[in-house]
Image (cartoon, rainbow, N blue to C red):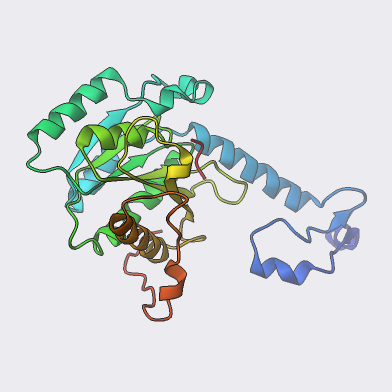
Length: 271
């Protein structure tokens, strides 16, 4: 069958023009009682990319090098999950530090001159790609706004769930911990970063005691907009002495008075 006849067999969807406004899979058209070959192949590719993102290892050494190049001190941490297979099958292990990491963070806390106001943790979560691509640009953008904060060393955590930040923040004596963690990959977003902010971190904190910023990536919530939200939440959390359901994100109301500017150029997590 020649190319002209093949194209004639595809029935276009009348909503096709709306595809320019969303990456969602809408108005794919029909070929008989199925979708055309091109959208089907694109779906299979996205599905494979999402699966690969879950299993892709975090290059912690490269992250430490990038952080040091940007002027950040950093620490390394690993959860009690010894490898990716255990991490995926045992979520509880991803919420607690390994014995070696716990001891190392205790030593770092003892050597510190003062307890930090906030500790940022870059964690692989369910997408190491997100942590590798999005975390440092967001960190640079955010810390440029935290001029009156004592920011502790950045912790790079592997095989990590959100709650691992509670133990890290508690050991380092931080008033706040902000987890920059890879979210569960979607079919259009294998590298989306989530931010989980917790006041007075300690073991046993619940998700109701956190605030979340989701879909941080150039194609979603940009670095400047995410940093604006995170700075707003940190500022008001410090004033109120809490995070979670009692802290509302009204940062968008400030945008008209304080437009967000993209100052950094650079290309949903399970608990």
